Image (cartoon, rainbow, N blue to C red; front, side, top):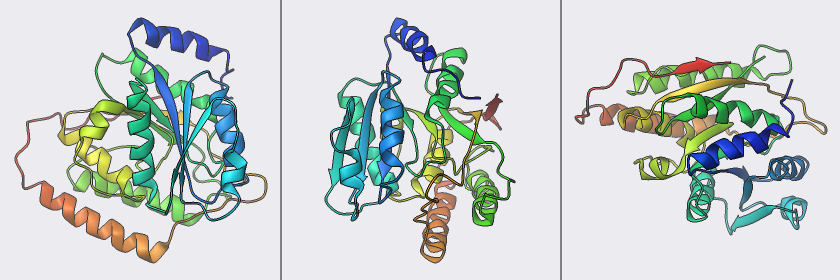
Length: 263
């Protein structure tokens, strides 16, 4: 069950005592049915919220216009999810956020469960960490086979490309340490950013942790996916080749495994 939103006050206080704050970044491209509620739920936590409209061509701008507590940034043309995430992170950093929670705009995540991600870093040793929302129930009949297979495939290649073994490398529900993430050399501007950043984080000595979260692949009105199997296959392949070549570069000695799973 999702935690009550009232718990956000305690977590904001705990972050505040550390001189830190968190914000939400929600990238969106043509998701008018779901993004408004997601952004409103994020604003209800009391955290700052940035929605990055990555060049939507439908009714999405209207769905996010005028939402209380939500700042909208718009790309004039579609640049890709990775580019949208970086745009939102830069805005959050400029506003003083130490941590950014990213949430997909397709309705598969329960925003209040971001508490679980923040608690991981509050309970972990001080320092930067990326926290993945490890999606439970991925074997349910409503989950597309492409999503089940894709998670296994990307987990394997993140490890092969020189990252740590992670539990859900395709989850878009994450907590990022903003300054350190923006300093990583990740080049991908589309979905591949979320794999590449994990490899680059490992190489930089940033732990990747995880927390269990729910997933819903049948939101009201149906789920919209912008995955292009063939284009993204070749983009993934090109990125993996590039990351494998990165392994030839020297790096500091790091632990063999840094993914710590927390329920």
